[in-house]
Length: 156
Image (cartoon, rainbow, N blue to C red; front, side, top):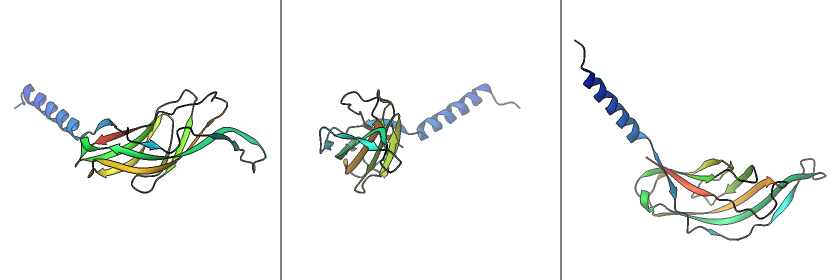
């Protein structure tokens, strides 16, 4: 005896709804309470790799930032928080940071996102100090650049 076509349709719909409910949704996190210690970061030319005798085309700068993320919308849920840096008009920008331990240290390149926290969200705000180092091609940076970092959360 052949199952009715409606049975197959119902099975397909159930499979789709199970798949959709198990996937995480991604949201931009409100980081408007984040405070940089410096408003303008000075950059300098990096020394070349041969013992500093040859200049590099790269510039680097650093800053300390108090990161404060508003996680109230996802309280008591599990999530993965990422630091994201979209593609930049000056080309590839490399970023590294250290933390005080509430979030993960890491690195990323423009156009990427990197995990900074994973687990249950137990408080409305997640705060940490980031010590950030940025490296870019100095030949492509003609004026002051503003990097548009943001945080994203994937919630289960």
